[in-house]
Image (cartoon, rainbow, N blue to C red):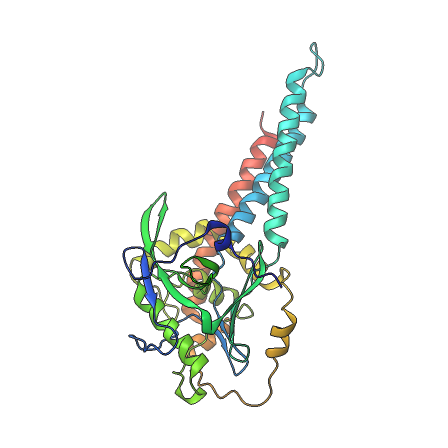
Length: 351
């Protein structure tokens, strides 16, 4: 299994002290400064492993949907241009070959990109093995990598995310293993999705430490994040719009207002993302990890059962969840279905 890392090429230096760049978290026997809290980051907990929610970019489905639409649009444009080109009096001159070649090339690029984003392997969740005392992660570029838990340092970095709608500060939780006698990272792993503040990241790391170093009865109870087999709308709420929706699937705060716009505009991408997470291939586990994940008997870790609302949502029977997504579906299908059809019809039947 590869142990190369994105940090090896970049030679990222990890400062010895916390500062404006980020925050170093306690490791080893150093006592934590926060209460262990998994938040909504845990997918699975058992004697074999602790799985955290994937930090993969949820925009993959949206990117794939846009690429498919672009490729299809360019293919239709190429067909219309070739079949409707009037060669009377000038023949098939240079402009015909230039334009048709350009449209075909753009169609090929869009369709190829859409295919790759749809069918490329899906990154596995971070897997923390208590038996092997290792933290595993997978990326498309490096394959499977792992960090020895007992040699790891934990970091909460400060990252500014700038988009067309503004900028925000995010705090991803990562672990790294350093080169001997250096502060240069030899390998690094981002454990889960970024947090809006450093506090929950620190609490999650203390939860990981508690899982690795304490007996199961001393690990705080955890509420699992639903996996991809639950109802699609419940999954979208929890995975794609967690900042806008509470545990009972009610909209909250300003994020709840923004939900209507983004859920409608990203509707096609959301469904493709759901399909990708369920059906795209997943990388095979390393042999030693696959063996370590085997266990029998009852799970000694305390798992908080889902609420009645969460259970109904997972079964697709929560009334306010269904009503909200029916409204979103109307506008989403208008944007992703009706408008593209009108656009293509204008080209096909226009004058």
